[in-house]
Length: 314
Ligand SMILES: [Zn+2]
Picture: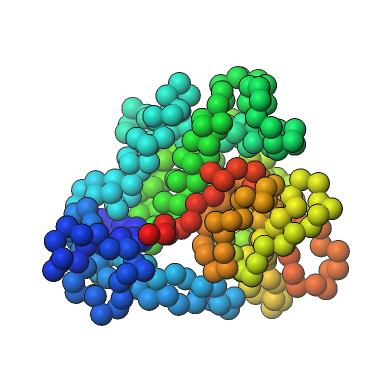
């Protein structure tokens, strides 16, 4: 049995059914906290920093060592997947991004995400107007409304958020069993799709070789403030993120993600120190100076449903 996922809400055992956001809790509440869905014992983890890059980690909640969520609790991996799939079905009924298989697992259809990315890009490049359905029509003509487009991104960002909230390998294995990523006529692994700050170097190297033909999901923690470049054609705003500092053959390398934002409204909900999951197309910057230790790459964001905060606000 896995340890479930990072949580942002809990009940206090001495306060009945009231649900508390992590921002209203503190270390001294430990021993008094229960899962909001199943009552399992959970604990408060204070904010701290991680690794050589000193990346901030927000305060959050997790299970105590020997505690377990009940079967299909919304904070277990299986429960969270079921919840997400049910939520996405309501909008995507004719062409869902998740498809139930005979063995009880779900297909996650990367091909739909690729089309959604293209449509979002077309809408932006045509001036952001949303007058006719032509920009929403791909060759298969199934993305018919902006609501449906947003729903595809929301579903993709949701499953990626779940991946990032998982804390241990047995739960990662369960997610891999439950959700298989279909691409063209085969499958790709979760490792080809999802990159956190322990694997930026792998993403950068794949991008530099030009062999990533599909969108990727990246966990990033924002650093500093949004930048504006008025000359930029498609992405005037950008946000730098905390890096991965890696030792390779005794050489230090610093891998830095940057979000490239097509609209000003996209950065209104983003601020320094927050961790986000982003689903989008990525590309690496050319290394102009071989002696430089810096390696940077970008992820494009056209639609606000392409990203989710790792931990929801209150
Ligand atoms: Zn629970």
